[in-house]
Image 1: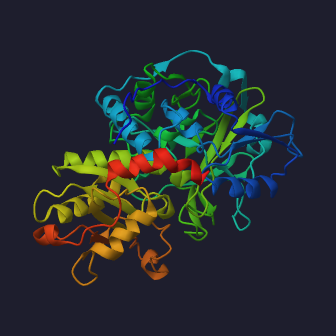
Image 2: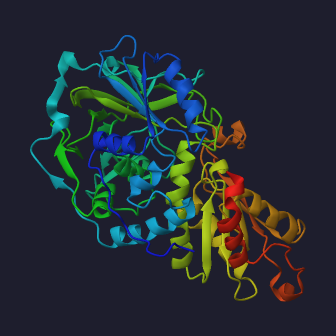
Image 3: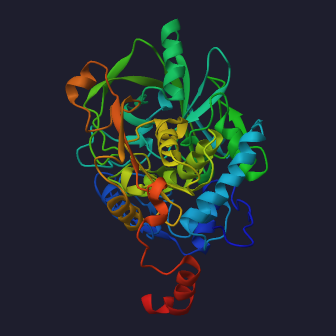
Length: 488
């Protein structure tokens, strides 16, 4: 249930530096000096990202780099996560997700096209030729067994469909090979991967820009399942209520935010590969071994004075990526289940512990026999739920699906292993899934199976199901209001 007076307060920042100022007002930024890129920043970030109430950290005076060349990590957490999306800081995560869904619907229906401008802070420094050196920035080594330094974690790649002309903005990991070359990885089926495959089939180099420091709202849209053919810039603009200002790369003509911190511009040639990986991924494993991956020949670097790198390395969930994806993906999944014609879906939560993909709870108000099965299968196979899912648990509407304990209680006491589980085989997954055998990956089979679990009271005898020994919702709310202070 949304709070009364649920109003959109507005996104109070236009770039990463303004966001830092707003987070400072909330007391949720810590300034750290002297941490090393070799180990300290990665370890500190790991510590912070596993605590949903931990502050953001801004690292400066990194040994070997000029003062002012900074790294920001753990941007999504605490009260600042609500501020990022423009909503009151006291919203619960489910309230935030539901409120965001209303705004997102409007943004998809009425995107605001990005606006091309001639100049912006990102053009304060333009490096070409011998000046190009990706090592200029204090890229951390995020995990001890990573195959190199990954400059692209809190970043996105900008590409253009060579046939249809639309611009895609997607989050893909980017590894430094040398001063002028970076590698990247995109899972099969993702929009950026489809673009690259078209260029490769035509034997042409793909223009690419990698944006490494950007405001959190634009970054979140770059990691969201925006529909095919829709530019994430335009959705971010609609969420803000004004167009995102972009400049065009001088070599590729691709648009990137005028107030971005750092941008790498280059070309991905179809016949050039280099070993990429391993990298600690969002599953909590080194999900893919060293492999021959595509590279970008960097021809230009654009950056602001005293640039700030946004670092968002994946860790074992639950962690930062899982938190922000849970808020956004839960909203989008609820929308898509309803769009498929499933009635009375009261709440959806893509659980952080499953990386916001592999464990999903769906609550419904049961209306007919088969309702739970329908909701579960749609959730497992629609666009948002279709990629890299694994378990979908459908429960009655008295369950708080965002509460893992509540969800597991329903699973244990309202389902029967022999009759309540449907298995889907051959589903769209990712090579990053550690449970797919290596010999299957070697032959190109990266599919997995899904379990759809009906943990609702059985519809045909639901009225005879034992009564729950908890207070009804209105009495429980009264208890929390009157006696909640005892928990503090």
